[in-house]
Length: 502
Image (spheres, rainbow, N blue to C red):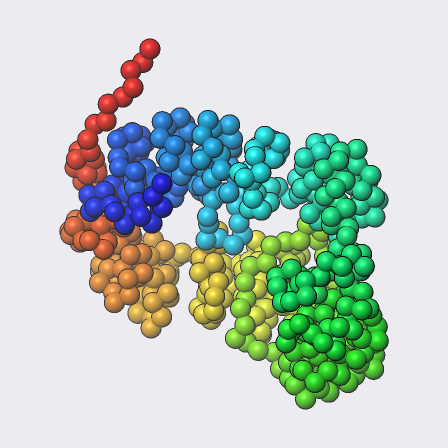
């Protein structure tokens, strides 16, 4: 099968126009149905994968005779998940595999989950080759929490994946489960908590398996001592520094390690003793002092006496909510702290109450404001815009995907030196036609593409761009396209023979 990129790269100009039309919010339902029935694969790909669909078009896509077309619907993040769920029993494994793999979306907030009954059917009827870890991202939070105790054994197997964080009673039930596969899976996870087993299976040379064990598994004293005296790789002391099973005397030892990376990792440990904390608070390395300054054991007064500096050039990204919410009192303490790192931790909380939301939206720390904008569902429009204007790191574009990002008045940024800011004009319904037309000639291609879709683009320029190799696709997606122009684009389609009705 050709890849989506190959399908698109092989599309000629007329096909790309039709693909743009497939995305046009003004295209009537009958036009979309015609494209679905008769257009080339590149057009059907864009139509079924890259937009929401009217009910009749979704019905036709589910029943489409071409498996590639149905597979593109299976990967559509824009339609209601119940539409995708209708493909759960598709006769072609290719479609089912893409349903299980899930859509690709630029929004880190992720996908709306599939219905629980659809996920259960996939887990219980699909082969292992058709299921992957990405199915977790299509589960509701309620189903993920229910996996370890689900009445269906195959789902309890999936639930053993969180074995280490489960309550003791749940762990015991899984280890005594009446289903052989559930018990065996639980036991495999339990072995990672057995220092003797970890020691017996630990690879002797650097590898992903060895790294994972040193970071997370229960380590015997013999393994720890070998890492300290004869490590297999240069970073292994830093690896074990954060391991929860590290003996107390080794924590003390590594708190004075010559490598600042090791000391920095030790500084995060909850079991760090008072003497070690005091020593690390005066460490010559600023990264170590910063790490220990956020330690939960300090009072605010003690924390304020540490000489730390919080960098502003870090990545401030969306963080998925934990299955178990943080303690609201702990979140409030962090939000009210004088330490920016603790306020940043609070800003990531998706359930922050209104008073703390208002307080942190006006915070003087860039990281706090941007993390709040990235993570809180009720982040104010003004905060979203301010965060986008001030933050230029990775994940900046995610802010544009927030439903409350403002639109009115954004054309005031049409002459900004930053092309990403100039492109905000495309979101402004009141942008002047002359400004829109000028920006379709912008030196930056992303600005040209965004403004070509603006409904205020003058018709003569829109018509001109339908013949532009670069921008024809975007021009055809412009909702201001006239009915006559739409008709001319569709008239070039061949009429494919329909199967005979018995």
